[in-house]
Length: 131
Image (cartoon, rainbow, N blue to C red):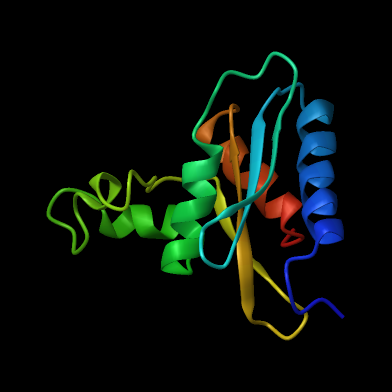
């Protein structure tokens, strides 16, 4: 059972995203952070442009919700408008997905950047084992 963000889980999460991205013809950056938003693992695939994968993962971890869901509230006039200017810079669009342990508790997050926003989201969901 997985109750914490282990080295093995981090490597598996990154490998899942990398394999799926490669299959789809994308070169992406993949970041895994712990439940405090601290970086635990990172891969920048060959030819990937520097992206916001770390910020996406960090956003999901700090707010304990997927970055896409936060984006709905971060629009002009929304309850958390200007969220992206807080905490050293956050991201309120798809690609940051919360990771859960076997007991359902949040243990961290994964962020993917470098594909289209919808594909970043899909790759991160796949990496997290949620599809």
